[in-house]
Amino acid sequence: MTTFTIGDTDFLLDGRPYQVISGTLHYFRIHPEHWRDRIRKAKSMGLNTIETYVAWNAHEPVRGDWDATGWNDLGRFLDLIADEGLHAIVRPGPYICAEWHNGGLPVWLTSTPGIGIRRSEPQFLAAVSEYLRRVYEIVAPRQIDRGGNVVLVQIENEYGAYGSDKDYLRELVRVTKDAGITVPLTTVDQPMPWMLEAGSLPELHVTGSFGSRSEERLATLREHQPIGPLMCSEFWDGWFDWWGSIHHTTDPAASAHDLDVLLAAGASVNIYMVHGGTNFGTTNGANDKGRFDPIVTSYDYDAPLDESGHPTAKYHAFREVIAKYAPVPDEAPASRPDAPAFEVTLSGKGEWMPPAHDSAPADAPATFEQLGHLGALVRYDVDLPAFDGDRAVLAFDEVRDMAWVHVDGAFVGRLSRTLHERALAIPAGARLTVLVEDQGRVNYADRLGEHKGLHGAATLDGRPLTGWTATPIDLAAAAGTGDGAAGRALLRGSFDLDAPSDLFLDTDAWTKGFAFVNGFFLGRYWRQAPQRTLYVPAPATKAGANELVLLELEQALSLTARFVPEPALGQREE
Image 1 (cartoon, helix red, strand yellow):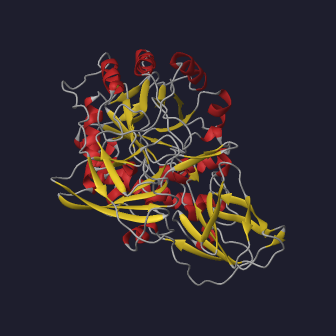
Image 2 (image 1 turned 30 degrees about the vertical axis):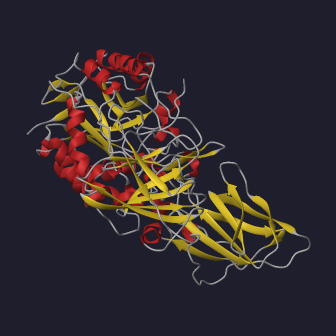
Image 3 (image 1 turned 180 degrees about the vertical axis):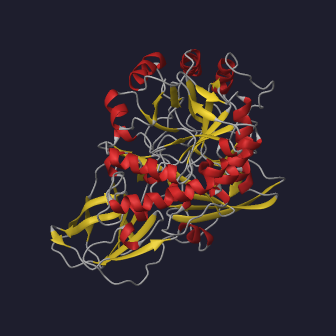
């Protein structure tokens, strides 16, 4: 039996000191047909371990409908890691942050009345316990002491930045051990004394998350983990992007230097990310620290392997550093080739607006949660009363997150949560229609689980506006039917390929919307900086005829789609 334990100064593999050199791959952000390729390329950089979060809301978006197949086949992912001779680290949360929608927590969970998120509240603990048991049914038999490759399991995630409920942490440990997890258990927090103290228990091994000033951060970590190996289990080698900002990058030489300092100190490391992947569909998260900032579709992260899985200058810089401390395969993967470049003519007619469904009128607009809707769009309708003058002020308590306002079918204005907009003057008319987009669920701090849609009461010149109906919109179904035209539109076109190919769709000719290839939901695009291309993974394409569909929410500037040779993720900070 192979053992992996914690010694006085090191991790011990069969009793011998072992330095973990790991990198993060999120199986839920990578097309399953690419899992093996990304794992092999991570191994070629010199890694001996692969780490992943487990996204609860990917496995159980609807309560009781557990799915561990296809994109959610965690067992297959771990087995592929084992096939390459690598160890694995599993971080099941239940909260993962990860710039992933709702921090990985299912909407049905966080919208449960009276629930206490991330603390020892009975409803939350009951649901979390059931979730963890399901995850550990997959993980437990794959532990290293049972012939598998899993060497570490993490309890919660950066909990010290959120709370300090020790009873909650103890219950997670109990459930974990009762489920048969016998490998060492860890926690992670930023190396700030109060976070390290609040986020762990004496029996758990404390690790740190940081991306610079390695020597200083290791010293702080050692004060709170006096014995055993030091580990940076999130070495931030890049950063994420949000709409309206720049494309964030880090200098390869500077990141490689900090990695060198870590490894030279004998510390173990998990590089976050070795390959970021993509927030396909509407899985992106958001941050709100006074301003709502939804994350872009790309999760390139300026990682050593880029969004399409090819090595960057950072990859080669890290590989050279790792070679000083561990064996590195002789050959590195090839650089990214140019993707096929071509144009596609799009067609469509009429303005796209999903039809309203009959529903019982309500005094206030229903939230997405009240509707049980997990999609990104809801159409709201209400009859307008007569009012004095040519215009009246329409106001909502809060708009989450973007609203397009129409009177008698004519567009009259837009309200943006990011800009803290919640009111505008509208003309007289018979019918008000408001199309609302959930732009991404906050993945951090106390806004986890907030409701989406038109939130609270609606007024017209200060008087209650009642009688609202709401129509949830299935984006995939909408993309499969109907017609469109320039303007808010449903646009479609076809193109031929000689073989399945990675592609990069240039979105600069459109304003804001969603894109699909052969029914595969690529994600969101927005003319607002930074991201300018959407990655199309080769398995989403096929030899012969392929179909591109766009749901444009504002204004299509061209009826020609362009596929370009390389990604354009936005201007970098100089």
